[in-house]
Image (cartoon, rainbow, N blue to C red; front, side):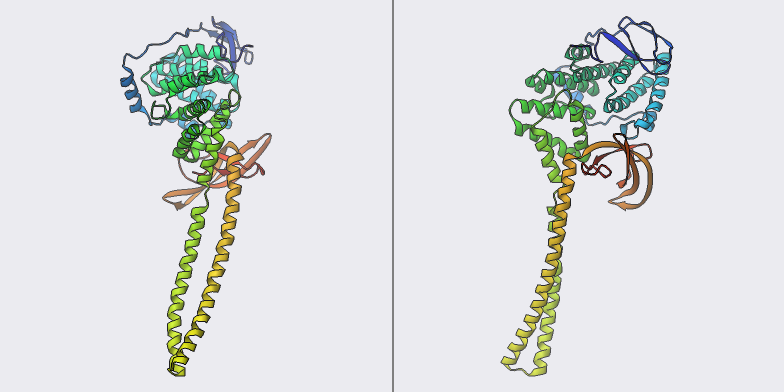
Length: 465
């Protein structure tokens, strides 16, 4: 096959002066930049794709150590968090992010500091996510290999090799994917490093049509093998795909549903975007994912609790009127008997007239409120149907927050703010105002995941929990 962007036969790095991608041989040398004309002194590739050290721990001990690290979200260094609020660099700040990358890269080369290595690695993660979304494969390759060339911590190198392996596999270059992965430690006792290896191994085996190998490395459920939170979605999709390929479509649906239900709207949004990121290489879970997504969307948009509440309110109002009218009926009966005499015939006539009159009033009130509730219920069902269609078929985008106002209104202890969101629809810029709960990342320059109406691209909604 033709050489791909992630082929191991060449080196691709970022120019030390301007940050543009440079291509050179694995032997390195003096490489001129095609953009700024600066000459880069590139050392030979040091990574020979040989496995690094393997843990001397027994497998049960290693898994126990990995489980102890699970469900601990990766915290970006403060300087990177300020640049990428919520863990994502907006397109508007990519140039700034590359400037910071270049400065940190130079600092790390001069100091060999583990702290600088951590900052450079974290910055690479968030920038790579943005570049992947923009399909800028050349800069993804150059960024990852440049970082691999200078970081000083082995766990960082392990994860970067695995990421290069996954990107090569997405390009269909499985030979290069295997080579990048060959340099990883297959038995790391650090969860991020181990999970990167497992997911890359599983992805290659998925493309090679080896579902049993996928399940061996990822387990048949998330309880079998601890996976770093950063890679949970990829692992879940690859695991469910292997189960589906083996013929158990309903088992794959359950696997996906468990993950979707546990993570709420953010998990649903992330899984859809992750699946789309793999789409040009393989259609993951082609039967089970649409079914699992529809079931979950139906669950979160179910109108029946609201409709039941409306009917209970209507019954409560009717009960109040019935009680009031009952007391009124008894009072009017005694007044009628006192006014017209106490014969049995008079009492029966008075009772019948009053009961019929009040019963007709109550029937009118109950009927009126029932019609109102029926009309509201019909409106709720129609609104739910439109909302469900948008959730199932709308386009997911990351919208940039341009402004934040408010905060005086508090709902369930969370201040509500009004944000103005902006996103690109092809060559057209769109914007919308939304009220959201204040929280990490809800600040100017941050991003929020929104769903664009498939019939009206100027309308968007946040993913519901």
